[in-house]
Image (spheres, helix red, strand yellow):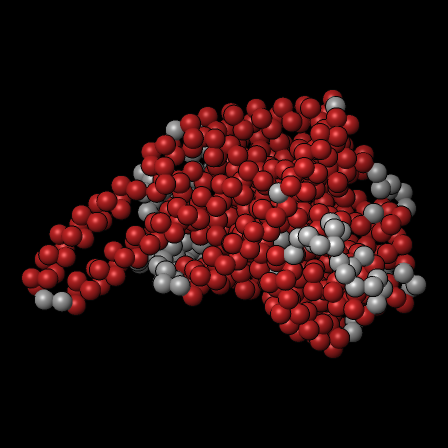
Length: 534
């Protein structure tokens, strides 16, 4: 076991013990810190995530696009379907199902600027929902994942966050500073995944309670669900990435697409397609305004704090987990192919997903006199999906499929999370031991349970916002390090190409110069990982 494992385990364990014995105090302290960060540094989240979007666009259209994440002859390890299934499952998963109906309905009644319950509010609702699930989260994932994949598969570095800092801080990335970086990444990862596990548990409980009268929607039921799911994802964790996570990802894609097509066929299909194109147009047209708006002149920060800042913190907090996992399954792809795949395809899918469930939710809520919104106020946001599905043909079967999908996403995210935490705390091993993954599985489940015990979904959101703040600063330096290395290597590759095109005397001079440059560049990179398995 590494120092990162023990330090991280100790820090998270202290938080869990604190939450078990002093839950009210946890909620109080989280609230104070959360309020301070959101009101004082909310602009920081907006600027940082916007920077990631700009960097992702530059990586697609800039000069580094042809550089491969691996050796020149490396082929992609996974086909496109499996790769996209991994991206979808790790990157969004439970969140899409949880917020598919909930977020559009909520914004319809409490829009950022339009009058509530109007056509303008519906249009604004869909626009902001896509904003929260569009390019910003996926660009955040892409930048971090690309950094890890570049240093790991092209230059043989350990699969660690700290490896990416070697061009900036040299060998100090392997000392105490490197341990601090990895520990911070683990801390952000634990709270990021715990937030999703908490959301998944509350929605599974709500679905069971809504469908079966004998099952109460209580904290106790939530904790039982977390316990059962923990057992399931630990069983999956013992099978490795090419069996458990792979098959679960396929299952997730099939179930999610089947549920979406079911709602699409039975609902107002033409209106859903029109909503998709209109929302994409509004989103792209208003992206700069939404991106930089901090409501500096209106003074109304409720929507910004409750939704946009929470999401930006959530994506940053999830990025070490999702980024590490995406990097692990992306060897052999070029930078351009990688960034396009990680940003464009998931954004288009998310836009269509919310168009289908958002429009269907609007119509059902309107037809029932605001029934879905009323139930959300009375029973919580987690019941929105099931209140909607109850009116569909074969409702019990459809709700059962929805619960199965949420459970499958839940298990896959937790399984992937234990895998990534195992990598981060075992020196970058691409296949950490089952024992390490089991330990982190217990920690994830315990953290989610403590946060629900301390303050429910609000505690989950506050913990996410706090954990993401220091990691966002680390990500800025990671980006600087990546571009420093890419710029150096791109120049060397250009010179090597020119050398092959010129006369022998010029080539000999350039060969000596390039040998010097290559040696200097290699000194800035992290030491190669001795582990041979990929």
